[in-house]
Image (cartoon, rainbow, N blue to C red):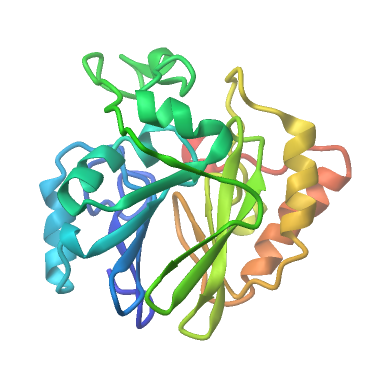
Length: 248
């Protein structure tokens, strides 16, 4: 699905647009002109469907120069090893979560807890050696696109949002940190932390954001910052923003 001149959704499952495997998050492709950045990588199942979407827009996995993972949950990160092998590209992730992705640590990523419920009982987390850890303010450049990192601990140990200007719009790719209408996704997992989440959302709300691209559900191309501010304002009252309704 082409969104803007250089931004595409190339995978999205049952909590999004129903394009690829049902467990896929929204996977975004940003065309930098001299290669592409993939933001998140999906669950890594039935991957031919993602490749078909790429091909329909004139791309293949070999065009991907970098994969930026917003966090280590399986629906976002388990497809990274396959893309890395196919494209020979770098894979980036939040520094505190990079080792768990590299080693396929099913306890740290909470996959072990979700097997047989959210994920198939025989599902395994593919190891992705060589993941490059990113911290606040770090940048990744491919062609004429530069994206920078904002750390957002809370939904997971330390998720990251990805910020940059594409096609003249200030874009924020948020993974599962914040969704349209100021919704969040807080699960009963050992690495969830509410107060750091609230503090990070306050900083995120200071950014100028036109387009908001979350990891599930719909995106928006105007006033994306208003959705982030709605979550930050709710946190600021000492309460938790509304839970993403797909998961309630």
